Image 1 (tube, chains in turn brown, cyan):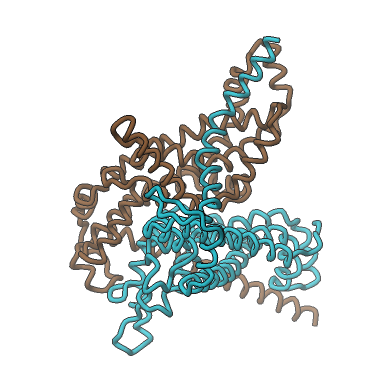
Image 2 (image 1 turned 120 degrees about the vertical axis):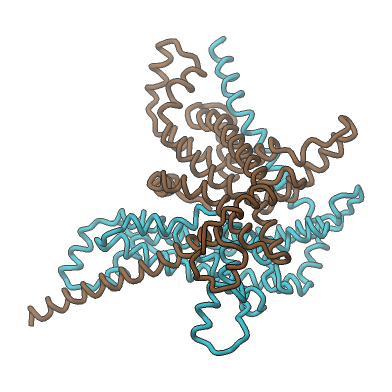
Length: 297
Length: 296
């Protein structure tokens, strides 16, 4: 009786294991196949798209990438995206680090107020306020046209970088000040004994310790800035300022009328390749960082 | 007091840029959403008329808004249930069993999360393509009709196609979250359950779920808020609300009215209703799922 029961558990354990593998592999296939298919499609010639979608490419048709890069302007859009993402990340770090530091480590009037305000900011979602921001900048441009003779707010990568920075501020400050609060007060005391001022203490003593958090912030915001398209689509209306995802969206829309499949998938690969490469390099840090920082929607 | 005035100046310069940006690009626009919902205004002209709650009255009398409401609720329910079930089961399998290649699966399942929604939309447009699409090439093996399934063109199907793409994108993210909280459950609980002959499925319901309940509740709130947001992103890139409004969701409708249609005040009223609705729904779910807190 006992042995048969044990055998039952053992064999059901094996069955369970096999079943688990099957389910996991199935999901992995469902996720990997579409992504790999897109890579494959990006080197196919246009005529090949009328055959079976599962057929392997007949050759390596590089022309797709050249078309996407030059004809569809993805090269310029790439430059815009790089500039925008870099500016936003630098601005975010320069602005969020000191703010999080003083909110976490200094007692002053207004500290509670601003801490609460930034916390409340976690609940503001950009999708609700993108049109009000557009109108605000549009009104600013009307004023600028009267005063300076030309608009300066819309179609401006730097302004967009400021908007991105503002969007990322609440979560970044929440994450960083959470970390700064865990540090011992003795670091500042020791620095003060050594004669370091407030600024030097912050830059030379505290910042280096926050390196892991800073790296997490750079990674997450690189992904969200690089992939963002609702704000950039609204605030950058001129074609020469478009970012990569918006460019890809144009290709996607154009594909419905004039069929240029190869160019579309080449563009798609151009957009997703940087994020995929980064992910492969730092995947451990990213999934760990996500759970470390708590939740982000 | 030279030290103290230096201290105040330091605090001021550290905080001022963040506060300025925060007020200009988050506080004022948010305040504007609520204020402008009470006005009739196109957005570009100077004529603003205060009309009280008229925008809201008009909104609740419009059939279009009910269609939008229905689409959004359907998406929230379908995406939440399916994503939740998949993420939880996969997380349990991955963190409980000592399978080979655990890390590989974890890495693979998270991939959709790092891709731009536009990229995912483009990939799924290829999958759903009626003539040369991946899905139809598989489905056609099992059906004899010549007419292809219009995954994005049929008003009855399109919302589920959209849900499919959203689930594909979200499963990995929630799986990693559940795995993180499952890692905190002490192994000894499972060992003693093993000794008493409890099956893995029984253990899943009796140990795993009760012990990560707090985490599950938090993610339920997340599901609602992020489905409302993500559906906007997907709709914008994939269907633009079509065919014939069958995939118009809360925020895409708001964006269309406020930006494309230039009925700014009306659009903001939609925003207010959606905002209040999402928080109310999250609050209700939070209250309903309240259980006694269990310690390990």
